[in-house]
Image (tube, rainbow, N blue to C red; front, side):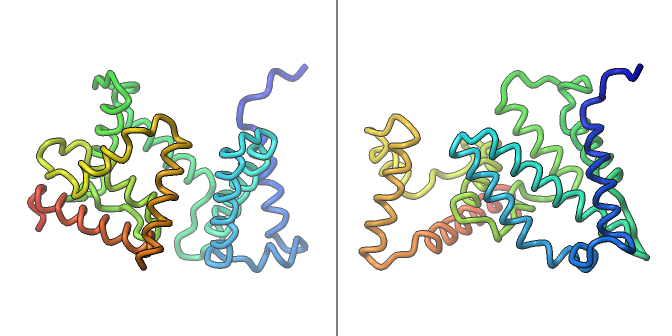
Length: 226
């Protein structure tokens, strides 16, 4: 009598299906895909997953996570076929397991971290050490949407604390937020700022990117990088 299934073992079925699709006699469309040709699908599935979360669509989220998982398995299968530097889905899994263990010394080692903020600060410090990065802002993808990029810059620099100068218009932002007590109100305020900016000929995406670059320069000056 078979014992209880192990969590995750059905992922092996997906790996087997992808192997069949990419092998001779499989699917011509799947067989001709490359890392580059799949980029648009990876991005699309990521955004569809976000939409499911925002709409609290649990059934949709389960489906979209499956589509995302397919992209991971698909890319790993393509990589396994590389004649010069092949790696597999197991290498992908081994890498993230090792990373999670090393970045959680408060769980798997002797370090302590009492709050989520401490955990996040430790994560970024360990990541910078592992990758030989000289700035907490190194490695933030420049192609991220402007607001996401700005959030990353602010989050990464939190460990510098009072060493950083206050952001321009910080006082005005606090005043504007005085009547905002939930995320919906915050979103309405952002929309209103975008609308007012457009009336004055400002592009919110460009303006936010420029402000993020200025903040990165300030962070690197504090770090002694500039």
